[in-house]
Figure 1 (tube, rainbow, N blue to C red):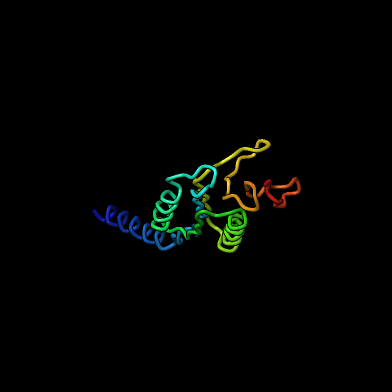
Figure 2 (tube, helix red, strand yellow):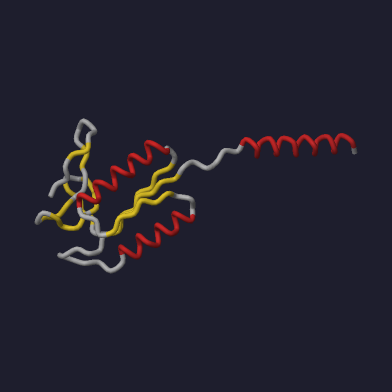
Length: 136
């Protein structure tokens, strides 16, 4: 009986030590963009989708950055803010976009609301890794 008691005590002590070492969860940051108000083809669901996703992710412990009906300038600023948050906080990053999308030269992207008389395609990465101006 005594060896069993010692074994159980050891298991309990190791379990407590393991739980005491458990770290807080990694920081979680999400960027959510929902664009619906397109002049050429309005959509019904992106704002509701973005709101629902933001609520779900906040409930899961994410810090949420959300933009709705964003033009190119707002989308670029949101992406930069998201990048800055990830650099500062570390941890996990999640990007969610609901709206019109497009593929140009083999690259996929979300379409922002038209501004300056044309469609925005967000940011593109140049060969040197720098963010370049989107095609518009």
